[in-house]
Length: 486
Image (cartoon, rainbow, N blue to C red; front, side, top):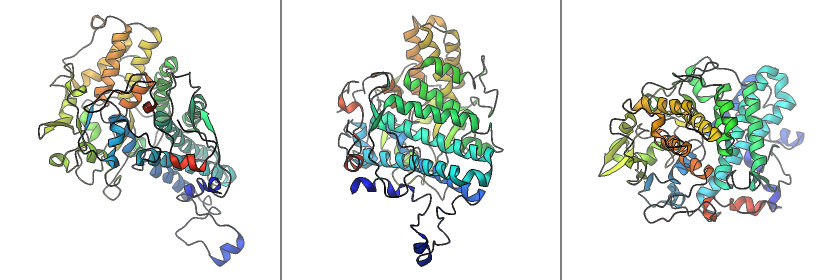
């Protein structure tokens, strides 16, 4: 019986189900609840469901903050200050080994909630919605839903599955659910392989690229809603995680010009901002921000979840200073010069360095970055080096574009690198500096097969150790007998 209840309520935020005509007569659907019978009756209702999927993926447990934090603190750049499991202490010290812990359960359930919302929506569009809004707009909405589903599956793979390099994607991934769950059914499902899940992610992103608009009419929507270049940018991240560097190059070349200044020639005109600090200030809608999760004064990420709360100390923005910058981490890199503009987003309070990239005071409504143009440039640079195994000239130029934007005194040349490995290492280190606090470092570590680094009181975790990835959520294991734990 329990397995038949799995995910039944996961679509509750999207539609309110009714069982039969008699039930509708006795207990009519309230006017403030949309029944599945009417959820696709108008363009406004259809678009409202798309917005509901966005609202769900920017939940604090997903891309509203915690997913980024989890991937940052799994690296070696942050020091835990509170020993609070609620705010990720177990993630920081590599001990979310219990499948019942909050971090393990909450991200899993939220990701599948988003996936199910997308699935229910896609089925509704096929059944009725497309006839209501027309094929072009339907394809646009479906593309947004599929991109958000892809983002959710990608996040699950990064935490709960072995990296792609381990067995070329043959290891267990996660259960791949592509059918909407809105009522009692048997939802027992074995884990698909890592490769199979990545194949679905890429299929969703390919569909999104084809069917999303090139741009929207406002800078805000170009930042908070998916467009063609969003799908392309996310594909560079996915292919990089798979080690398929030629594919990274193919995708990145669609939105990165062949020479500096690097810009996207079609769709949203993505480009690096002259001043990186402008990316993290209101209105958060620069052309460098490819996708961000927005928040307003009446819509905060939630208590103990906001990026500013985690990283900002009380003396800076009223945050809780959950994580300072580890003195042996990237903040200690001598190559990251004092005059580098990115250093202005690091400040010392009480003798400890803190990341001040997220500066809005309580209730901490900084937009949560998902992907921005600087990452695409560095992904392209790394892919060029690794695919050619050379000290690639364009890779150096791309590296310089990111570095010199904040530090004009540093200009890399081929003479600075003895071989392709040293150049690739420099690019990865630049990602570590540039994307600090944006949820990238943890995935960089695992996709490259590096050990999770030792920290004060915490030993190194080698790439073949069980703690390298998280266990499967205990709720899934309890209700899905076909799903096996890590």
